[in-house]
Image (cartoon, rainbow, N blue to C red; front, side, top):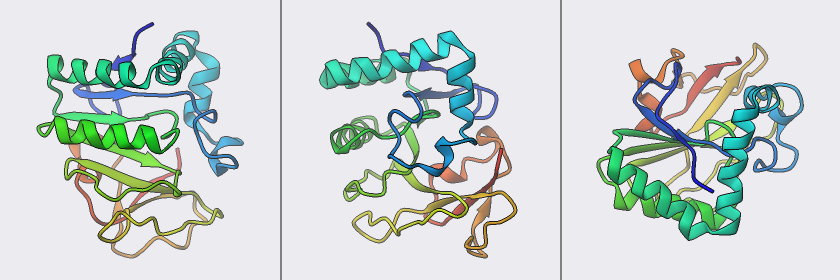
Length: 195
């Protein structure tokens, strides 16, 4: 088995490496987006090659966490991406996985890492400066302020026309990471139009 890392896509940019896990299976129970609005779940259902790649990534992690992250770090050493996005699909499965993410950030100081998560319960203290994690918030779903050791994780708000909690100074996502990159270094909230 091998780890499947993508070199980029239209939204993230053609030079933004990324890795994904199966949606819903790795997300917290009761995630509000899992019912009918998970864009990653649509791709999971529609494309067999996507199911294979994301499913293989999770299987590799479960069977051999050290090997999974060693494969990722070897890929990063070889390809030297400036940007690496964790989980275009799926979420951080557990604290062990997050601790490995932190370790990779410390090891690969010239790569900027980004992750959005609904795993509010994990311990985010000690994030390296090149690992940006934002807490995902959905309309009508409770959000907690997630401590990161020196304050709180910034929040990534989803705006479907009903969300009223977005701070006035939150940054509006223009829809393309390659032209923006605010999320990769932000300490303030951002918001996205529901897609």
